[in-house]
Picture 1: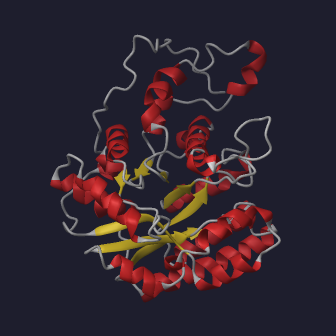
Picture 2: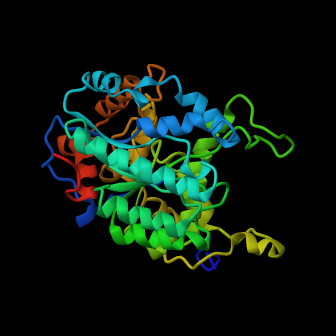
Picture 3: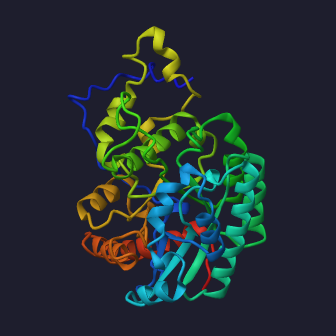
Length: 379
C-alpha cells in the first residue's frame, strides 16, 4: 500500500511549491565535455519504413488506426529517405535516433498480427540504421505489449541481435495502465538490459473530453489529452512502484516531461498529503506498493526531451525540474507544419536560448544520449 499518511503533512499554502533542486551528478548522470561541440543527435523522432507504411495503409477496417493513418499519409519524410535527408542537411552535425511512427503496434489487429508487425518494423529499422550510420545514430525497437511474453522476446531479439539501443512504448496498452501486474516482466527485462525506454502518448478521438460525451472535440484529445496521458503514465509508474523496484530504468518522457515540471507545486506538497484527505470508503483508490521516498523525488528520476515546439519558457521549466543531465535534445520530427525540419529548427533554437554552460549544452544535444546508451550508438 502507498501509505503516505504517516509523513508530516505539508501545507501547500506555506510550503515552497517548487524548490529548485541541487541536482546531483552521480556516476550515471555526470555531464562531461567529451561530446563534440557540433554533434546533435535527435533522441525522439519518427520514421515509417516502407513495408510498415504498406501494412498501415492496407488496414482499412481497423477504427483505432483511422485518425493517425490520415495524419501520416501526407508527410513524405516519414517514408521517403531522399526527402528526409535533404531536410536533415539544413542542420550540420545532426543525426537521428529513429523509432517507429505511431500508431501503436497493439492496434494492428490481433496480438499475433501485432507481433508480426513489430518484427517487420525492427528488421527495417535495423537495416536503415546499418545502411545510413551517417544519418541514423541508432534505433529504438517497437514492441507489442498485448502479448507481454512476446514483447520481452522481441525486445531481447532487437537489442541482442539487431543492435537496438532502446525501446519505444506508449502510455497505455489499449486503455490498460502499465503498472498492471501483467506488465511486470517487461519492466524487469528493460531494467536488466539497461536500455532507453522512450514513452509516447496515445489516445484518439474516442476518448471524450467529458463523461457526458462520446467523443473528443476540436482535437482536444491530441493537444491536451496526450499531455495528460504522459503525466498519468508517470504517476502510475511512480505510485505503482515501478521505479521503486527498478530505479535504474531510463524512462524518456516525450514533450519535456509533459505536465509534471509545470505543476510540480501540486505534485510535491499535494501528493505528500496522499490519503490524509481521502474518505475511508475510497481508500482503495490510493492503495499501492510502499514507497521509500517522496513522490516528487521519483518524478525527478524520469528523463525529458526538448520536443516542445518552440516554447523556450517550457524548456526552462523542464531544465529547472529535471536538471540538464536528464534532458535530451529531441524534435518529434517530422510532424511539424513544414513536415520535417520545423520542429528540429525550433527545438535547436530553444536550446540555444537557454542559459547553459558549454558542457551542459553539449550534453543535452548528444552527450546525455551517448551516456545513457553506453557506446551502442553508431559512429
